[in-house]
Length: 414
Image (tube, rainbow, N blue to C red; front, side, top):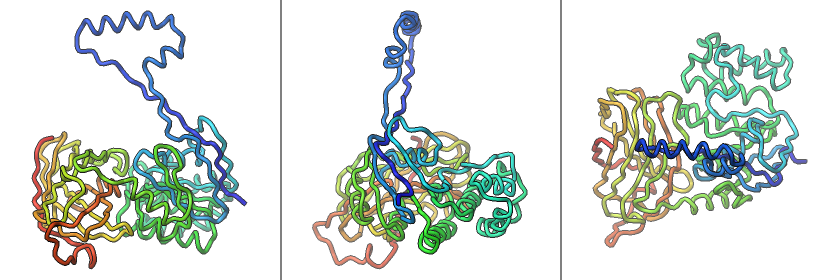
């Protein structure tokens, strides 16, 4: 019996375009055209100012009761849009969705919480929305608070919570209030590493011991491979592969190959609300693929909302199976980068000699504060190939663990 059935699902958005005027003549000319447009049909006016964008296009699949399915794809592939439709947050443009069972969703920080209510009140509110009796919620209350580790703040309005506290409570509520279907997006990336591991362990126990249906969107390929029995790969709003998890992961890695010199957009997801640092773009060596025993140069652009006494930046290379093999951290020797003004900045980091086993690697990038709270983290932002150099010696890096080579970080105005 299917817990989730999706048939011919499509979602269309309209992207508005506003004319930019550089001169008075342009402004007057546009105003006259606006008078004329009043006499035209509504569809014609909309076509002149808006562009269609299909976030999803003709998607069909079924998820059996008790199945654990990982949904993967590049940024902008349509993953979050799909989960919002399944969670009844937005309506599809076309197609049909059938869900059998009680659904709990964890899509983004703060989803389902009323900011003026306390953590305690939001737990009972979410339980009531799921159709649970007050006695059932009271029975689950203490495990939820203990899992979220917010006992001291349970009677504080959640609008005063940090993003990490929000995520901890939201996941604890979603996992403990016994939904039959659990839908989780990449929101866990906002939490710290220990809590992410704790959440993944909880989802694994929920799936294996309690037999609940889980739909899990993540760029954490190791987590997908660890407990998802099936993978769905999305690309540009369409399902390109639906089958064994390893096949979906391989397809994801193959479609993500990096063209040297290309700028990779980092703005779409992963940043904590109101964080003072937001990553903008990343680019690697001008030549592709990367060549072993040659220099590696990575350019990182980011923006700050205010001056900062210090911030840290990290770039990591992981093998396809999720093992970290190379880490570059700006504060490796305890020196954080001072940012004396708000605005756009550019960082360039150089490794004199790249020494990795030739092969394919996934790249992640993050920005954090001096106390290592997460500002913006983008896992699997791209995939790169490393080819053997002309005189490649035997390799250790990429086999025996995380390599932290000497690196030179240079800050400039973007």
